[in-house]
Length: 427
Image 1 (cartoon, rainbow, N blue to C red):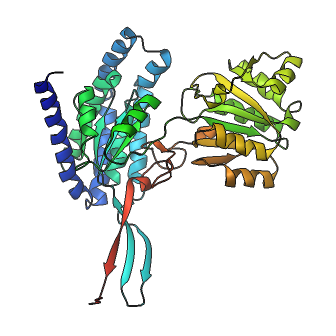
Image 2 (cartoon, helix red, strand yellow):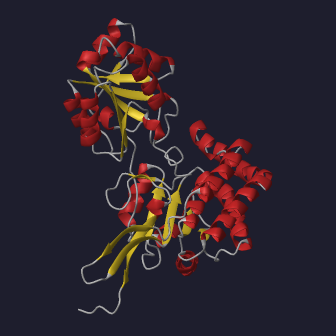
Image 3 (tube, rainbow, N blue to C red):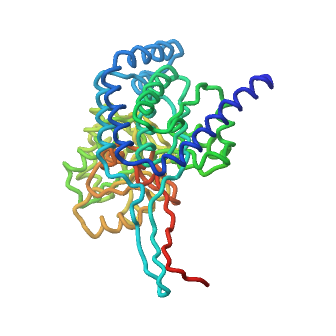
């Protein structure tokens, strides 16, 4: 890239960030009624402009096919009438949620009479960097708006036409309802230089949330000058205890691995108690095999499955650390819940992990000692999702330990400040 082009890209991105900063101050005090009216306008336009959105999406799908995108990636990219209707429903669900801005978290009257109140406020300006799925444009924009934040959206090359159409729809909806200009902006280029500039705008942008593959997230985390809220990968684990109900274990394992293997909350590892090898494993493995799942396992598991005529490949140490995002599952034998906890904390990515058992004491140990953002007892990891958690939608899933952890909704897009009411106190 020549210096003139670089300068032009820098100027565009910095101007966007400047407008977002100006909008953020006004959004922080924007009435809930105005925000909800804007969200309803977005939902209505999604419905009335459906055909135009699908036409723009077709351009991305055609380019994706020409560029050799896999069927799974094309599916993530595709907008259908049903998916657009689902997006509109999601916007209305966010509008129906309580506004977190101004919520009083705590209050304390100090001995000197000072009234100390801790209240929720927006973070400010949030940059969202994402790949493939155009619905992220809507999800992130409406969550940021409802929580009083300005958003800067930087979508991927493969969804450029779709994202551009959705951003224009958002701009028209917000303008007609009195939302400050600059509240939601899409960076109008997929040039990597624009991303580099955005990551240096720490004087205007308060945090970055990357959504996409591990390489993108690591690039953002290593180059951003502002805080980054993230998860690198989803190596999620299921532990089947000897006290598990077998049918429940089968159902949860199939759901967690095979219902949608290319998402971050799909299971990649199955740890099974040694005492459950004969009683539980064959039924679980057979059900997974019928769904097309390739099994990779340690020696005790392979011996058990071979005796039941079920195919299984040897697992390497690396297999247990791998996010396959495919119909592949690594299986490992553990002695008991103690070894299971150690295995999850060793091989998992602190995203979503589950225990299947009727032993309450074992379950409570697992829930307490597994160091992950979401930990399940007798349920599939596939529920780690903003919609399933009642958040309306999510802006991402965090495995960090500062500020936000797990699916991020409206509350996670706020921070707090202290308001102090006095009657003349001095020190």
